[in-house]
Length: 543
Image (cartoon, one colour):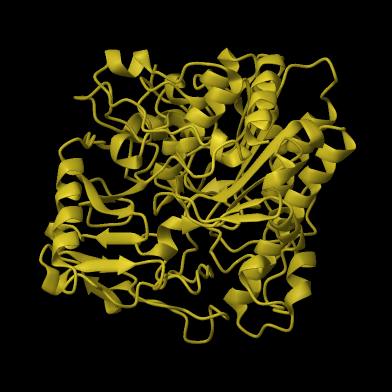
């Protein structure tokens, strides 16, 4: 039976690959979905995600990087973060001494995922957060193969204002919303979608006043509604802003959670409920356009929920969160669904290993294109690390091809600083080894478990007060058996010195092959172009 299904699948792919809708949530914690809570839990309200996960294939050991930009660069290039980017520096960063890697995000010499799918005959769209490079047009979504884009360049912006944290002198704000349309030829700031300056979280009655996620959802729905039966297959990445900081959400969602006393938790769960509603609207549009049966839908977060700075994420019962390599920072909610998923894989919970960059080779295989990256090789860049997951996801093979997860880290002293690329650990099977950066005393922050209800009145987390030394000797080593201890409570390094040494040797081996460019510093040209000729909007600033 399995052989017959695999043959049928090959014939299907040869005739016409499925559409692909790839949805990325931002900072969605492990416990920020209802299906990771016991029945009846009221704080988290995600009925659409719960139903999609229940009717699809839940990937319960799906890993990303611990911060935004590296996970997105990994997806777009098929590289493990240690081979493309482990830094969250600003898009304005440039190192003129390195024309290949001296920029924020992914080098323009990597072949992008959108390029592969476009080569395979797909119509390509990207909606939402880019965060993979802004310095020049070569780093933009269009150069990566996406003919249509509505979104923003930075780590985040204001949901109502579209403004970023300002780093430009003599400017009160710099806006971040961009539109690329291959049909009209427009490629520039999305000024027509700007809200009234009076629009804010506290004043949602100004005109116009549209939440940014609503703009994105409306654009996705518009794309789906315009599809015709004779159109080529589509590849649409919807990189949601929700639930990333700032905590801003339409009042109608906030009103559903008046029973929660803690203000941060009330806001964060309202944002999670809005995220759920937007996914529900997109799925409804797929069905209404008769596209569901021919579409593969993938959903995952870019990293774990953020516990610090009053961001409201929760990864219970996993330890830590965003910015930390404990499970709460890198093991994320993920599932695959849609009519293109084999019925045999629906309603299944699978604990096979997978990583975000594995979709590069997976989608290339679906499109019938070679994922080999000659352009990157010519520039001396690492080859892709992606594995084709489709035989496993489809049920044609019994196990995930991934047997190892490589954990990236950085020597940077600040969360969004530049530093050397480090290998922070490795997972093989159920065993996980963590090694902290030597320049930081081998310390890994956020050695903390939250609880089902988080945040609460004592929720201001100070990471320096919750740290653990994960060193290079068993006595202070961090070796966990995730099969029996998913919360990483007890290190077994001292009881298993031989295994500890083997995995440590593997970390050292991997360290020898990292890609570690110096990203540079903020280029004054970025602000000069944004505040000058572009009239207050971020965008490419180099030729």
